[in-house]
Image (cartoon, rainbow, N blue to C red; front, side, top):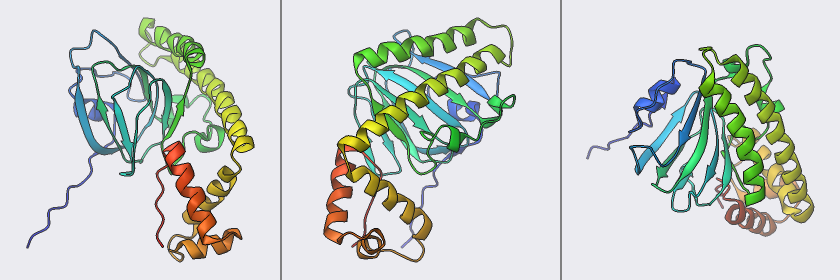
Length: 248
């Protein structure tokens, strides 16, 4: 009996990725692209199967409701207004519905060659292990919408093919978002002590997955019972839509 293995597509460039969607959009700048999702789009509804890409992705989404984002083959996230951050190489898919609106930004690390920040240290929401989603209320959405619009309007009005001014504003936006994420995660640590345990658990998995495979082994490393670890991870996974699996 033959077994068919479907290889997950990998997109090296932003235009390679765009050409694999029904969207007609393309970019002249290989390192930076701002894409509006709005009412006037000719493409209203489509599903993008699992894929990986070599560049960064971030988005401010609104009215997504029935839109769905799946990542790492594990979880499906449904939300109304949110921020999304994804580092290169992660697996994800999405289903776009007609109602969804958004500001989508694709960029490579070369986008900031004038500054060259170490992204995973400077902006930890670009996590190499998982996609990050942040539900936001209407007040926060309005604040971030103004900041995203400043980047987009500069991007759309410039005659500079390299979009230098827009890239500078994007960098400022990233620092603004970092302050929001830092505050959100600090509040989460205060209200949810299990989060610290979860982060340690994820780091231990990343460092030891070849040698240690069971809940009991990681529980011993964390000085907690296997039952407590399993319950903590399961509860946080359901609450935060984290792409984790545990083997007993």
